[in-house]
Image 1 (cartoon, rainbow, N blue to C red):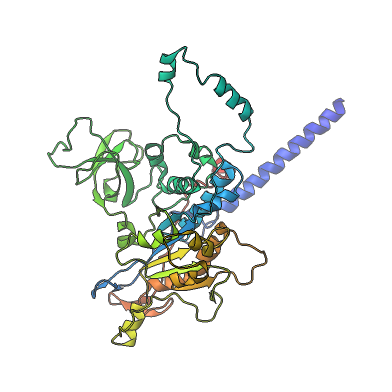
Image 2 (cartoon, rainbow, N blue to C red; image 1 turned 90 degrees about the vertical axis):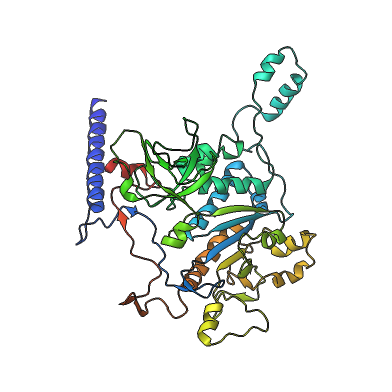
Length: 479
């Protein structure tokens, strides 16, 4: 016995030394530096690359302005009906949110295709008492009025959503909301029971505690003194932007509880080691300002549509969507076709002055991509009684009726898979649309009197001081 224990002790010591050597090698690998003295491996981007676009004429004006095209996707909430449990439904919604953030989607429309079934309120794999026994217990005490005061003290609990569209929209909004605002805008709700399974978006507006950024999302808070003026007598509300011990004094009076986008001078940020409470100055800007002024992706908005026709009728953009893309395995064209592109159709009878204007006018400002559910877009059109078209004529609703994966090896492609495939394959086409008509990637141009190459994104800066929310615990321990 003593000899066996001695051997086991020697084996444990050997394993400990081996693990220590592996950790040392891994730590050494993470600390390799390039000629500029910055780390090359083991760290994440300080922020995603910004779009750098050259001025071009917008469709609504003749002046040369920087136009950032928007991308919208429409998804039926019925796709959650195939997921058997609340855990799987939550994870499916998280996959769509991640795909939207990775490929810079600006709007997600959750529409009712009339084909979804109600969601189960209880998980099939939930541990605990048998739900049937609980229902019998509730029936026995339903008419119990022995302690009315006790019943009055019990708060009314929120019920989980049985509507798949409302459930999907709530999860998508929760994922998009910055983490320091979720407690304010998303109180405890049964639909968020498994929110811990959701992957973080790690989008540019999901700032960490000590990050310094020109733009921040915040919530307007009530002033303790009851008025909306600071000590200098200037009008303005206080906004909590997630800066430790610091509120932002904005230049407008806004109703408390409203979410807003604030522009802050980076020099006004307090020291990260300061524990003194105070305020800094800021300006309320449009939620699209980070994208329009700096090319920063600033999350997506979520919209509910009562039918597939409401996707187009309730479009938030003036003039509607320039290019409407419908995805179907019965599509007329394929992304693999030679010369495939996304161009805005010209009104009938309208002629452009020259070829250059024609190329500019064909570039879209607002792109919409519609995905079908289990039965496809055709069944959604048939289920919409307000539409005069039949399911067979669904392609007439769209400018492009495309088959995203013509060589699929499976009988079906799930909607969450179709979203990833479509956005990944259309991403280069969308990026080229953002460039000026006279420019293409890697083309030598003159801009501001200097010759340089036209690029879609600027150089990426990697952060060695901050570990991503998606990093493992082992990496944090090694630091």
